[in-house]
Image (cartoon, rainbow, N blue to C red; front, side, top):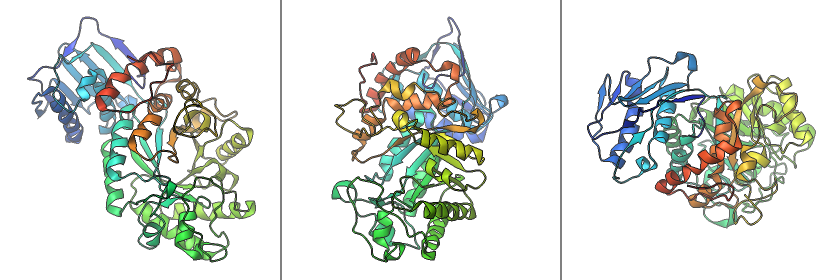
Length: 484
């Protein structure tokens, strides 16, 4: 299984077999949606009726227990008599059912009826996450991805107990979320993408559907409006946001660091206030990411002024601030989350330490470890290599607790694997770069430090191949893994 559970014990001679007369039982209406998701998939692959009923069942889902394991923790027991998944919350139950699906044969994930048997070796599991934030980022600006494509992405990544979906919604190459008070952001600023092809954007209904679908998979959407750099799409849409009131052309290349909002104009902060308000109103999660990275065209003193004003606007609109580690050079409000993307370089580490000194927590996304768009090796046909080559082993073999010196363990909120899409214009390419590296980042976020071991992880990762084949995932067969 990936992530490795906190505690697991085998039950000898206690094999569970799912038979055609099996039922799914639940003791809480809050578990109904989770039971429905499980039943829909297993009906499709097994051909069994799998009725859902109140009370006990062959597979029993209960929210009456496991309180000590927290909101995402669960207990699972599979033996000859049935399977019981117990959690204190519906979210914990969802995590337990995710594990149950991994315990079943890979063909249980098929979209057509398969032959049995449907067996699980007897086991007990007690499980809870190491970190509360376990994220993945999808850049929909360099190349745009539709609502259905984002849903497919959610389907795949949620299998590894990822609970945060960071959407990079604005950049130099495109603005992808509707803002009623500034309509040209999407009408004009969202019209293209890298390479000059047609772009796209999400209406408010589209974004609401992504938020809803992510919520069904117990993933919280973290929207990012990147500022004050990475803003050419906005600057091209509205001349008044530029220092000289002259709009640049739309941009479809991939270089960074050349754009900046006008820091000394009142209209800049009126713009941000209205954008943050509309995005915040559509986002149930408590974080709003304001970017802050690679603002090379913003004078340093102006950048510090901007951070103070922009973070104040995020808080004004009811959200906690999240930003890339450069924002820690400024003054941060209480409750901020700083995302470290450094390559273990001293300057970036100093900024991460400064964030913690201000009371912020850290989400760790070291580019030379967790950036899913980095090439696996020099000949990888997709991706970039500015942060180095990131093999499957490189992406797994680091410890969040010790990555940055002099940062206490309780200052680490979790980990995130970002996927930038300069070279990725379809889902097959996305899958190739995400799998097999994402499961390892997910394990770093969920499993206990003692469970992290490359040798045993290799073996478990190899077992994912049949499941990905059933799902039609275009994964990279990394040579360091003895794929099953």
